[in-house]
Image 1 (cartoon, rainbow, N blue to C red):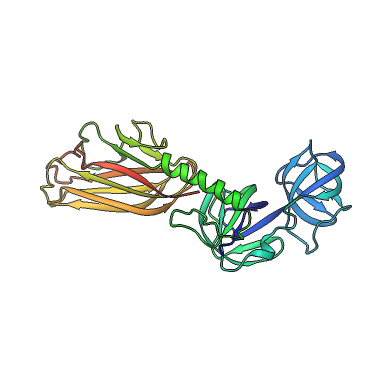
Image 2: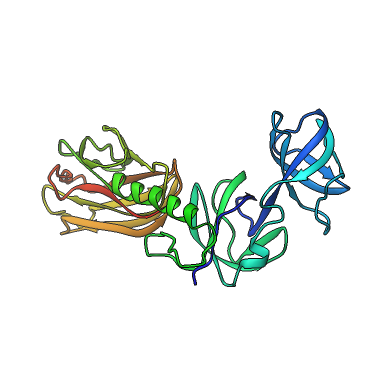
Length: 319
Protein backbone atom coordinates (compact mmCIF):
# COMPACT_ATOMS: atom_id res chain seq x y z
CA UNK A 1 0.00 0.00 0.00
CA UNK A 2 1.39 3.39 -0.99
CA UNK A 3 1.10 5.89 1.84
CA UNK A 4 -0.26 9.30 0.90
CA UNK A 5 -0.78 12.07 3.45
CA UNK A 6 -2.19 15.34 2.13
CA UNK A 7 -3.92 17.01 5.07
CA UNK A 8 -2.65 20.16 6.80
CA UNK A 9 0.08 22.74 6.27
CA UNK A 10 3.71 23.02 7.33
CA UNK A 11 6.46 25.54 7.90
CA UNK A 12 9.65 24.82 5.95
CA UNK A 13 12.99 26.63 6.14
CA UNK A 14 15.56 26.77 3.36
CA UNK A 15 18.70 24.94 4.48
CA UNK A 16 17.00 23.08 7.35
CA UNK A 17 16.04 19.37 7.47
CA UNK A 18 13.21 20.03 9.95
CA UNK A 19 9.65 20.42 8.62
CA UNK A 20 7.23 21.76 11.24
CA UNK A 21 3.50 21.10 11.34
CA UNK A 22 1.19 24.09 11.62
CA UNK A 23 -1.72 23.87 14.06
CA UNK A 24 -5.05 25.44 13.10
CA UNK A 25 -6.08 27.36 16.20
CA UNK A 26 -9.42 29.16 16.27
CA UNK A 27 -9.32 32.07 18.72
CA UNK A 28 -11.87 34.07 20.66
CA UNK A 29 -11.57 37.32 22.59
CA UNK A 30 -8.89 38.55 20.20
CA UNK A 31 -7.23 41.89 20.75
CA UNK A 32 -5.03 43.22 17.94
CA UNK A 33 -3.77 40.65 15.44
CA UNK A 34 -0.88 38.39 14.41
CA UNK A 35 1.68 38.92 11.67
CA UNK A 36 3.40 36.15 9.71
CA UNK A 37 6.65 35.33 11.48
CA UNK A 38 5.57 36.69 14.88
CA UNK A 39 6.83 34.74 17.89
CA UNK A 40 3.58 33.72 19.59
CA UNK A 41 3.06 31.91 22.90
CA UNK A 42 0.17 29.42 23.27
CA UNK A 43 -0.31 28.33 26.88
CA UNK A 44 3.36 29.13 27.51
CA UNK A 45 4.55 27.12 24.49
CA UNK A 46 6.63 29.20 22.08
CA UNK A 47 5.87 29.06 18.36
CA UNK A 48 5.70 31.06 15.14
CA UNK A 49 2.63 32.55 13.45
CA UNK A 50 2.23 31.30 9.87
CA UNK A 51 -1.07 32.95 8.90
CA UNK A 52 -3.85 34.90 10.59
CA UNK A 53 -7.46 35.30 9.40
CA UNK A 54 -9.15 38.07 11.36
CA UNK A 55 -12.58 37.19 9.88
CA UNK A 56 -12.65 33.52 10.92
CA UNK A 57 -10.29 33.92 13.90
CA UNK A 58 -8.00 31.17 12.57
CA UNK A 59 -4.30 31.27 13.48
CA UNK A 60 -1.82 28.87 11.87
CA UNK A 61 0.92 28.27 14.43
CA UNK A 62 4.06 26.10 14.52
CA UNK A 63 5.41 25.06 17.92
CA UNK A 64 9.20 25.37 18.26
CA UNK A 65 9.65 25.01 22.04
CA UNK A 66 7.81 22.71 24.45
CA UNK A 67 6.38 19.18 24.33
CA UNK A 68 2.70 19.63 25.19
CA UNK A 69 0.02 20.01 22.49
CA UNK A 70 -1.92 23.31 22.32
CA UNK A 71 -5.34 22.98 23.93
CA UNK A 72 -8.72 24.70 24.12
CA UNK A 73 -8.81 27.45 26.73
CA UNK A 74 -5.11 28.32 26.56
CA UNK A 75 -4.02 31.94 26.36
CA UNK A 76 -2.42 33.14 23.13
CA UNK A 77 -0.09 36.14 23.16
CA UNK A 78 2.26 37.80 20.72
CA UNK A 79 3.85 41.18 20.05
CA UNK A 80 0.83 42.39 18.04
CA UNK A 81 -2.15 40.61 19.56
CA UNK A 82 -3.66 38.19 22.05
CA UNK A 83 -6.63 35.85 22.47
CA UNK A 84 -7.82 32.46 23.73
CA UNK A 85 -7.92 29.09 21.92
CA UNK A 86 -11.61 28.20 21.41
CA UNK A 87 -11.11 25.14 19.16
CA UNK A 88 -8.54 23.25 17.05
CA UNK A 89 -9.15 22.71 13.34
CA UNK A 90 -8.75 19.52 11.30
CA UNK A 91 -5.15 18.40 10.95
CA UNK A 92 -4.23 19.35 14.51
CA UNK A 93 -2.30 17.29 15.51
CA UNK A 94 -0.90 16.10 12.16
CA UNK A 95 -1.68 12.67 10.75
CA UNK A 96 1.89 11.75 9.80
CA UNK A 97 2.82 10.77 13.36
CA UNK A 98 0.39 7.86 13.20
CA UNK A 99 0.69 6.99 9.52
CA UNK A 100 4.23 7.35 8.16
CA UNK A 101 6.09 4.11 7.51
CA UNK A 102 9.76 5.07 7.13
CA UNK A 103 11.49 5.73 4.88
CA UNK A 104 9.00 8.01 3.16
CA UNK A 105 9.42 10.67 0.51
CA UNK A 106 8.25 14.21 1.23
CA UNK A 107 6.98 16.60 -1.40
CA UNK A 108 5.66 20.15 -1.20
CA UNK A 109 3.55 22.36 -3.42
CA UNK A 110 5.84 24.90 -5.06
CA UNK A 111 8.86 22.64 -4.71
CA UNK A 112 9.45 18.96 -5.25
CA UNK A 113 12.50 16.83 -4.58
CA UNK A 114 13.37 13.44 -3.16
CA UNK A 115 13.69 13.86 0.61
CA UNK A 116 13.90 10.68 2.67
CA UNK A 117 12.21 11.04 6.06
CA UNK A 118 14.74 10.21 8.75
CA UNK A 119 12.49 10.55 11.81
CA UNK A 120 9.31 12.21 13.02
CA UNK A 121 7.62 13.46 16.14
CA UNK A 122 4.14 14.84 16.76
CA UNK A 123 5.16 18.31 15.57
CA UNK A 124 7.89 17.66 13.00
CA UNK A 125 9.47 15.27 10.61
CA UNK A 126 13.21 15.39 9.91
CA UNK A 127 14.60 14.93 6.40
CA UNK A 128 17.87 13.14 5.66
CA UNK A 129 18.98 16.16 3.61
CA UNK A 130 18.21 19.85 4.04
CA UNK A 131 15.22 21.38 2.30
CA UNK A 132 16.34 23.53 -0.65
CA UNK A 133 13.13 25.33 -1.54
CA UNK A 134 12.24 28.84 -0.46
CA UNK A 135 11.34 29.31 3.21
CA UNK A 136 7.55 29.30 3.47
CA UNK A 137 4.69 29.34 5.97
CA UNK A 138 1.31 27.63 5.51
CA UNK A 139 2.69 25.34 2.80
CA UNK A 140 0.62 22.30 1.84
CA UNK A 141 2.54 19.08 2.29
CA UNK A 142 2.37 15.57 0.91
CA UNK A 143 4.08 12.36 1.97
CA UNK A 144 4.47 9.61 -0.59
CA UNK A 145 6.18 6.22 -0.57
CA UNK A 146 5.20 5.24 -4.10
CA UNK A 147 5.91 7.59 -7.03
CA UNK A 148 6.24 7.31 -10.79
CA UNK A 149 9.51 8.49 -12.42
CA UNK A 150 7.76 11.78 -13.24
CA UNK A 151 6.90 12.40 -9.59
CA UNK A 152 3.22 11.44 -9.82
CA UNK A 153 1.76 9.91 -6.67
CA UNK A 154 0.33 6.42 -7.16
CA UNK A 155 -3.05 5.71 -5.59
CA UNK A 156 -3.78 2.39 -3.92
CA UNK A 157 -6.85 1.19 -1.97
CA UNK A 158 -6.67 2.62 1.53
CA UNK A 159 -4.52 5.64 0.67
CA UNK A 160 -5.21 8.79 2.63
CA UNK A 161 -6.82 11.67 0.71
CA UNK A 162 -6.93 9.95 -2.68
CA UNK A 163 -8.93 12.85 -4.14
CA UNK A 164 -6.14 15.29 -3.22
CA UNK A 165 -3.56 12.96 -4.74
CA UNK A 166 -5.43 12.74 -8.05
CA UNK A 167 -6.02 16.50 -8.10
CA UNK A 168 -2.30 17.08 -7.57
CA UNK A 169 -1.48 14.55 -10.29
CA UNK A 170 -3.74 16.33 -12.79
CA UNK A 171 -1.92 19.60 -12.07
CA UNK A 172 1.40 17.86 -12.63
CA UNK A 173 0.22 16.22 -15.86
CA UNK A 174 -0.98 19.60 -17.14
CA UNK A 175 2.47 21.02 -16.42
CA UNK A 176 4.15 18.14 -18.25
CA UNK A 177 1.92 18.62 -21.30
CA UNK A 178 1.94 22.41 -21.49
CA UNK A 179 5.48 23.22 -20.32
CA UNK A 180 7.40 20.43 -21.97
CA UNK A 181 10.40 21.95 -23.73
CA UNK A 182 12.25 24.98 -25.05
CA UNK A 183 14.93 25.48 -27.70
CA UNK A 184 16.57 28.70 -28.86
CA UNK A 185 19.13 29.37 -31.61
CA UNK A 186 21.03 32.20 -33.25
CA UNK A 187 19.61 34.22 -36.12
CA UNK A 188 23.10 35.23 -37.31
CA UNK A 189 26.66 34.05 -36.83
CA UNK A 190 28.32 35.24 -33.60
CA UNK A 191 31.81 36.75 -33.85
CA UNK A 192 34.50 35.64 -31.40
CA UNK A 193 37.27 37.95 -30.25
CA UNK A 194 40.30 37.49 -28.02
CA UNK A 195 39.49 37.97 -24.33
CA UNK A 196 35.71 37.93 -24.67
CA UNK A 197 33.70 36.27 -21.91
CA UNK A 198 29.99 36.96 -22.36
CA UNK A 199 26.57 35.37 -22.20
CA UNK A 200 25.19 34.33 -25.57
CA UNK A 201 22.10 36.30 -26.55
CA UNK A 202 19.73 33.89 -28.29
CA UNK A 203 17.66 35.45 -31.05
CA UNK A 204 15.52 32.67 -32.55
CA UNK A 205 12.92 30.67 -30.63
CA UNK A 206 12.35 27.32 -32.35
CA UNK A 207 10.21 25.84 -29.56
CA UNK A 208 8.84 27.06 -26.25
CA UNK A 209 5.97 25.27 -24.55
CA UNK A 210 5.38 27.00 -21.24
CA UNK A 211 6.99 30.40 -21.55
CA UNK A 212 10.68 29.87 -20.77
CA UNK A 213 11.90 32.80 -22.86
CA UNK A 214 11.04 35.80 -25.01
CA UNK A 215 13.82 36.34 -27.53
CA UNK A 216 16.21 38.04 -27.81
CA UNK A 217 17.45 36.97 -24.40
CA UNK A 218 20.52 35.55 -22.67
CA UNK A 219 18.46 33.45 -20.24
CA UNK A 220 15.81 30.79 -19.98
CA UNK A 221 13.61 31.43 -16.93
CA UNK A 222 12.10 28.40 -15.19
CA UNK A 223 8.29 28.75 -15.01
CA UNK A 224 6.22 27.61 -12.04
CA UNK A 225 5.38 23.95 -11.56
CA UNK A 226 8.74 22.46 -12.62
CA UNK A 227 11.19 20.76 -10.25
CA UNK A 228 13.76 19.18 -12.61
CA UNK A 229 14.98 20.00 -16.10
CA UNK A 230 17.30 18.27 -18.52
CA UNK A 231 19.25 21.07 -20.17
CA UNK A 232 21.97 21.31 -22.78
CA UNK A 233 23.81 23.59 -25.16
CA UNK A 234 25.73 23.03 -28.37
CA UNK A 235 27.86 25.22 -30.64
CA UNK A 236 29.42 24.73 -34.04
CA UNK A 237 32.04 27.05 -35.49
CA UNK A 238 32.04 28.20 -39.11
CA UNK A 239 35.51 26.64 -39.44
CA UNK A 240 37.87 24.54 -37.34
CA UNK A 241 40.27 26.27 -34.92
CA UNK A 242 43.53 26.68 -36.81
CA UNK A 243 46.12 27.80 -34.24
CA UNK A 244 47.60 26.19 -31.14
CA UNK A 245 46.71 29.29 -29.11
CA UNK A 246 43.01 29.15 -29.97
CA UNK A 247 40.64 28.22 -27.13
CA UNK A 248 36.86 28.55 -27.13
CA UNK A 249 35.13 27.70 -23.82
CA UNK A 250 31.41 27.22 -23.23
CA UNK A 251 29.96 27.38 -19.71
CA UNK A 252 26.42 26.52 -18.64
CA UNK A 253 25.08 28.50 -15.67
CA UNK A 254 22.15 28.12 -13.28
CA UNK A 255 21.53 31.59 -11.91
CA UNK A 256 25.10 32.86 -11.26
CA UNK A 257 26.58 29.41 -10.61
CA UNK A 258 28.56 27.55 -13.27
CA UNK A 259 27.40 23.93 -13.52
CA UNK A 260 29.14 22.73 -16.72
CA UNK A 261 32.18 23.74 -18.77
CA UNK A 262 33.86 22.44 -21.90
CA UNK A 263 36.53 23.85 -24.23
CA UNK A 264 37.55 23.56 -27.88
CA UNK A 265 41.17 23.68 -29.05
CA UNK A 266 42.80 23.17 -32.46
CA UNK A 267 41.40 21.55 -34.66
CA UNK A 268 38.01 21.50 -32.89
CA UNK A 269 34.91 22.76 -34.62
CA UNK A 270 31.95 21.82 -32.37
CA UNK A 271 31.00 20.76 -28.85
CA UNK A 272 27.93 19.87 -26.82
CA UNK A 273 27.33 19.69 -23.09
CA UNK A 274 24.29 18.74 -21.04
CA UNK A 275 22.96 18.16 -17.55
CA UNK A 276 20.04 15.74 -17.03
CA UNK A 277 17.68 16.06 -14.06
CA UNK A 278 18.86 19.48 -12.83
CA UNK A 279 16.89 20.54 -9.69
CA UNK A 280 15.17 23.90 -10.25
CA UNK A 281 12.54 26.16 -8.74
CA UNK A 282 10.35 28.81 -10.37
CA UNK A 283 12.38 31.89 -11.33
CA UNK A 284 15.74 30.14 -11.71
CA UNK A 285 17.65 31.41 -14.74
CA UNK A 286 19.73 29.32 -17.15
CA UNK A 287 22.32 30.79 -19.49
CA UNK A 288 25.31 29.96 -21.70
CA UNK A 289 28.57 31.93 -21.59
CA UNK A 290 31.27 31.82 -24.25
CA UNK A 291 34.91 32.78 -23.73
CA UNK A 292 37.51 33.02 -26.49
CA UNK A 293 41.30 33.28 -26.65
CA UNK A 294 43.39 34.23 -29.69
CA UNK A 295 46.77 35.34 -28.22
CA UNK A 296 48.54 34.96 -31.57
CA UNK A 297 46.04 37.28 -33.31
CA UNK A 298 45.46 34.78 -36.09
CA UNK A 299 41.73 35.39 -36.05
CA UNK A 300 38.95 33.15 -34.75
CA UNK A 301 36.08 31.62 -36.72
CA UNK A 302 32.53 32.64 -35.84
CA UNK A 303 29.90 30.61 -34.02
CA UNK A 304 27.54 29.31 -36.69
CA UNK A 305 23.87 30.24 -36.66
CA UNK A 306 22.92 26.80 -37.99
CA UNK A 307 20.89 24.12 -36.24
CA UNK A 308 24.04 22.72 -34.60
CA UNK A 309 24.15 25.80 -32.32
CA UNK A 310 21.35 25.78 -29.76
CA UNK A 311 20.35 25.98 -26.11
CA UNK A 312 17.56 23.70 -24.94
CA UNK A 313 15.61 22.51 -21.89
CA UNK A 314 13.28 19.54 -21.39
CA UNK A 315 11.00 19.05 -18.37
CA UNK A 316 12.09 15.96 -16.44
CA UNK A 317 9.98 16.32 -13.27
CA UNK A 318 7.18 18.55 -12.08
CA UNK A 319 5.94 19.80 -8.73
